[in-house]
Image (cartoon, rainbow, N blue to C red; front, top):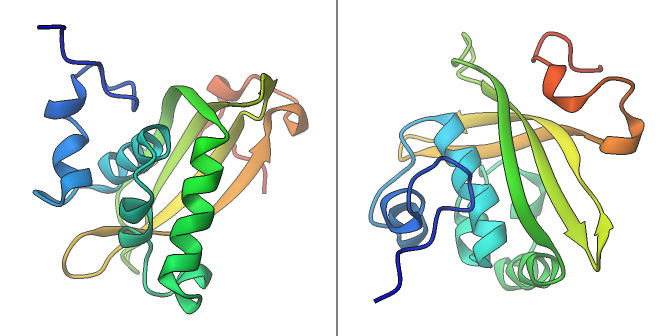
Length: 156
């Protein structure tokens, strides 16, 4: 039997022990960072339904038909490779309940680099953490190495 594959979220764990329980709906991510990692992993594993399920109810895509958004997410995921994720910073929920995660996502589309850095906002909806919004910069737009950024130094 071949060894279990590593999780695409780059946690160092095997997929079945890391993000798979979240993708299957067996568990909720315990914090914003684990949700963000599981969403990156969901892109890599083409788990579009999970990406829909983990959008906050106030996310703009939630105003559109679920089938349409899931189809678009699946098409995007199928057209890209997701080889590496680096979590650079995280912030616990503030007084409004917003938790933040800053990450660098290595992404390729047909051999072309589409990597980016994002500061994401997450909210707990009473069931689990959900992706609310994010500010993204393409790698080429940054003037410093992405790994040197923190939430406080992320470009506004």
